[in-house]
Length: 268
Image (cartoon, rainbow, N blue to C red; front, side, top):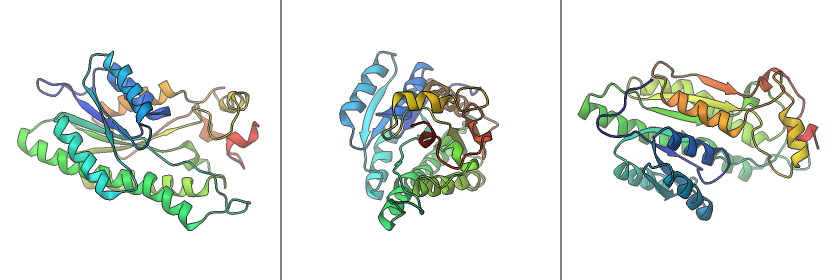
């Protein structure tokens, strides 16, 4: 486990922290004593609810809005976060677009769909990772800290369990997964880069509660990941000094059961 930063808590920036896995990840870091920068795009009300929950845990928290399809907004947001949280030690890129397309379907891939997924799911995390690297490099040069900060990219178990559904989403996440190794080499020794790949953890799209419950059980362990499982894994990776350039699959073994369709379509 990492030693605490001198005379201050560590802070984490979680993108997409207003909802779903992002919110649970932000809350789990707060439960472990981290200060939290909550990013949101359009979900201001939900972001404020996340803040209220974190405030009850006695750590520093604030919200930061940015459109992740806007490079200037990304840079401005990171600059503001790093100024308000000088102890920034971890970046979790959780925000993503997850919209249906499939080449052989009535909803084939379009240029706009692919561009949108690439911008939010790939380009924004890479830009933020670069900004995190430059920031951490300057901090290390000033302080000589032996702590090893990190970037955690939220991926998906389906990247090693491919099916044709959600083509644009899968392509964008596959590219992000490739970047984990590339950036880990490029950013060492100042910054660790890791992938975290959940299984089916929350209902998606028009999936029913019953359909989700069935899908969640379709793993070797009889259950996939819960949001809490994923969040705890993120905190573990943020504190694991010897881990970089690899992806942790937190999915109950879901990736070990090949499927011709996305699991949500097998349980409706």
